[in-house]
Image 1: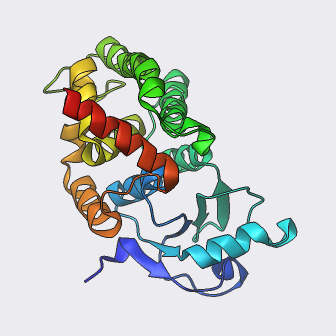
Image 2: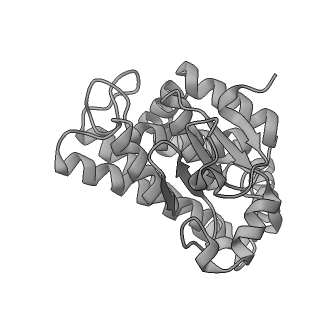
Length: 260
């Protein structure tokens, strides 16, 4: 049986914005893959919210249709509809910022909120770099060898951020505080989702950023996020970003693992 918060909807795009009763808290338009959409799903799951996801055909129709007919002007998903408040947002960082604010997942101070958005931006940059800017090129062994030190530097940014806020391997959170916030959910979703699908990336994460890896696993083990990760695995299998770029990444990482 499919849990309520991962159901699929085949209603007309934006129908709930035009008077049709919404059956869930949100509607999320995203491809049947983890990648950027998994950050939104993880936050909604953590907050105990329900959502529906229209199928890929509806997303394609939206993207190919006239801009004036879009629920929000956008180039590509994710797009999130807050059904109760009739708010529609595109762009992953903007969606996460909105959810952080409305679901009480942001720090109390302006500096803390800005640092949270910095973490969201960093996560978005990492997945862009790991897909070579949306697959403009494919991974080769040579490209990966040149990139791996940069990936380790990205991990060092997380590690140092946590260190400055009291993070330890067995306790603490990325930006301090007494409970996990948006920055922690984003961190866990980023590194766990990739690590679960690419063992070589998990190995690099644990080597280069042991506190970050431990935080990711600790936060990811919280019941709502653990259930979401299990559902993600059941729905998407080993897929992460999809397409030829993922295949090329998998090939070079598998080769790296064999050499190791």
